[in-house]
Image (cartoon, rainbow, N blue to C red):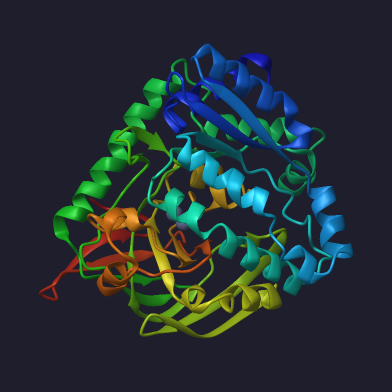
Length: 407
Ligand code: ZN
Ligand code: ZN
């Protein structure tokens, strides 16, 4: 990215993404190789009169060596300071920007059980923090910038993969327009209209079919609501949690999913790739699964806890979204999940049921909202996908034909 584009990126992320306020703290989670991005965000944040900016650096090369050399027991000891530092963000009213730019094959030679053990321990230790994040107790935004290894994976034949990936990201984030912030306002309105249509029907269930073999019905939570790009945080201020984003999403009922879903794109999970996979559901639970690639990783994921066998999100995205139209396989969920309808194994967002943020665990469960220490999206939308909404009286309403909205 050029300096000019980087400044545009920083301003859009801070204004539209986390909606940084005067005198508010900001945390940035950033790959070490992208320190110039953290610096640009920091500069923009102080121009907006931020209180303080703190950066947490990430390095996959170090993480990989830790995975390979430290024992699973040691890796599973999550230091108290880390937990405290996360809870601190919520207590002190920080917002945070996370830069997701993983090399999809970073941990290809690490035993999946070590990754699973670490992810499980981290999920448990940070449960309170994740609960705040998923209940919008904090304003947050996940974005991406090109990193060397990731770019090579996306554009293997390019002479300058980082440049190409950078250009693709700029387009999907609408930064190539003269006024990206205005573009985002328009985009948010379109997505809100889709969510309003779905909310007005208050569907009991959705039925997905595709030529690849997907034939799947998912019931929705009682009191579910469809959300889109812009949400309100607990403090009442709007924010956009993912940039780019093209989805409208809600909460499936944890006991109501039946049939077969086939993956439409590979899933990169913790530095490993799962591809060509099929999940069979009965009464909301995964009862059988297979994968052409990454079966063991998928197995570890599904067996993480009781909640990872059930669904926590269903999201609709038409095949004519800019990301889908780019036809680029990003190997990064932030982008790939916005190119295709997706569902998530694991925790449901309390915000996707009316009043969910203030309900107890038991009350949420009663409505059908799933709970887990994980939340992993995977893509199921194909170019020929049909989706019907099933009303409470059994009537059906077409929502998608041939992979796109027909409303
Ligand atoms: Zn989603
Ligand atoms: Zn999700």
